[in-house]
Length: 231
Image (cartoon, rainbow, N blue to C red; front, side, top):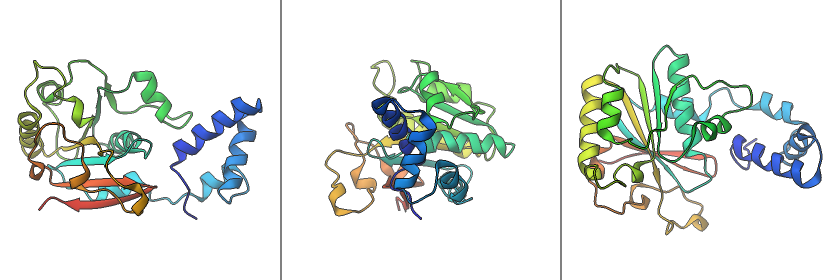
């Protein structure tokens, strides 16, 4: 059975329900799971497919690639990026999560309760391509570097234009064999009513960027992901 929303969003709904009704969290979790067609929250967790979305995405990205993970707010793109780095570490690789949008506490809340943050999390205000390259200079083939998020890399005027930063990141991915995934916003003009999944034309790009620098892109909507190539 397909869930109506990603697990982290369902858990957030349960926490709100618990607060609003002043009931224990486990009661609210079970109620949300029943709405999804399961007997309880534990039943729903046990019924989840073994092949997670993160595993699906990771399998579709070759070492040395620069890719984009894009979606409108609330679709789980940041959580997906974090899971990619976590999965890399569990597989014996290294994972870095650079975020200009979240604090360390925010990152922790994106994970399921009891799950440790196994990747390197960087929340520096100085994050840009140069900072990322300096921090991951010893990255190797199959390591995963996630940037949250693309549109903030050149927000400081002292940083180079986004186009130049993407060119540097592309070269870094090719030279090291690491996977670099940039999380991106989707433009508000994207029409979710069509029931479709967004694509490269729907990326919110305030400044011109050559999108062909990306080897491919994963676009999320409604719990589904679509893999697209730029060429």
